[in-house]
Image (cartoon, rainbow, N blue to C red; front, side):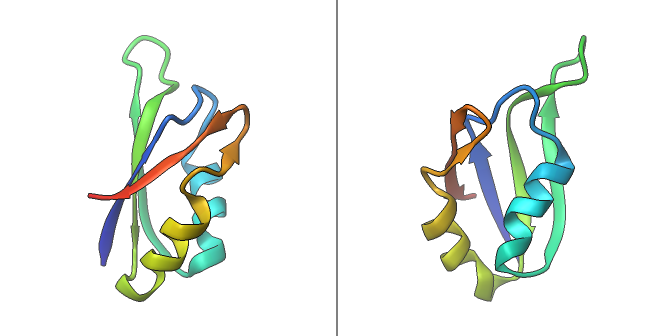
Amino acid sequence: MTKMMVQNSSSGTTKESLNTLFSEFGAVRSVSLATDIMTGRCGGFGYVHLDEQETGAALHALNGRCLGEQILRVTFE
């Protein structure tokens, strides 16, 4: 399993939206988001765990992709 960091996500990003986005590339093992302590909304980044064989395709396809109004930065953690 590989941990991927997703940066520059909007405050409206949810675990479900990231799960849906990454599930195009295989089984998502877990999703976690940094959240604002006052609002509970996304703080701009999170982590997605995928099986090793799916991470290359996900990185290539999703780094620079728009989600809402934001352009995502996806890297290996």
